[in-house]
Image (cartoon, rainbow, N blue to C red; front, side, top):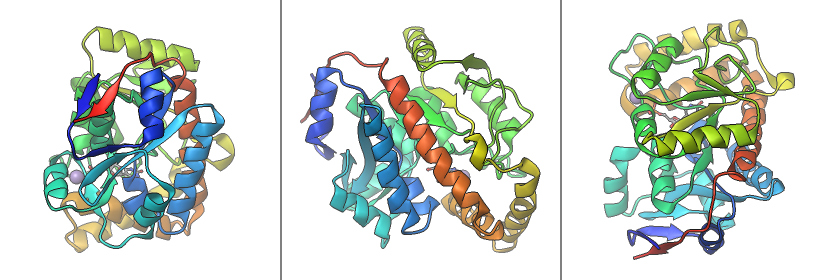
Amino acid sequence: MKTLPKYYSLHPEINTALQTGAPVVALESTVITHGLPYPENLQIAQAMEAEVRGKNAFPATVAVIDGHIHVGLSAENLERLAAGGEMRKISVRDYGPAIAQKASGGTTVAGTLIASEHAGIKIFATGGIGGVHRDAPFDISTDLDQLSKSQVVVVCAGAKAILDLPATLERLETLAVPVVGYQTDEFPAFYSRESGLTVSARADSANEAAEIAKAHWQMGGGGVLVVVPVPEEDALPMAEIEGPIQAALKEAAEQNIHGQAVTPFLLSRVSELSHGSSMQANLSLLKNNARVAAEIAQFLYSPTGTQIA
Ligand code: PSU
Ligand code: MN
């Protein structure tokens, strides 16, 4: 039996699934609180849960509600999270303050990695991970560090081109995080299927991706990044998005945006400046990643136990 600190709230359905070894897929929630506007954020959160269920796995959206780390959210709490109000962006260093101050918010990739590992969940889906920012060598997302530590698979569509993608891959190499291309040799760039950069390994099936992760963990490794290109019909060419990115980066510098506000600012400005053409790609890749994660999850679990102290 695994014991969780008392400020966790593990959904009964997820608890049962984990104890019986049924496949569970966690879902990141900063994309809901800080990544997309209402009501698209609520619709996509519900659609991602449905994709996971459609593949006979259990979705566990992770978020902090009134100081409790929820692993598996009720429909009411999902709506509350999406509706906004005082919602924090919760990465690793933000848990302590959020728990003690009974705050609410979405968990980043790094935050979701920690909660997943504590709860015994082996895989989660998101849109894109954070990384090394362009022209800001000290602005490196905690996502990368935490990826090296938690034994969890993260399924994403690569990292957004707002980042320095070559530097992000170099950092992942240093941190010993395998970057596994799902049916691809190229590192995808979120809205775009291409980046000109290569992955460190390739998996052609869900089973192969799961086998890679299990072997990595047996060798003492931490996180495994599985990168899935956005579906072809919704992909945007990289050149189309570079103009809005440059403009958004300039605005961020002019307005002196820094710290955890940088990523949400850039994401929302790029979306506005590209006149929402990026929204369709964003929604498409989120659903696709949830589905692929549920397929890989079929090969990752065996019966265990988790309980709350
Ligand atoms: N990239 C996206 N959409 C997002 C994020 C990243 O394309 O919503 C969010 C994720 O939650 C990620 C976080 O973990 O931003 C990284 O923020 P920062 O760069 O401040 O670490
Ligand atoms: Mn940062």
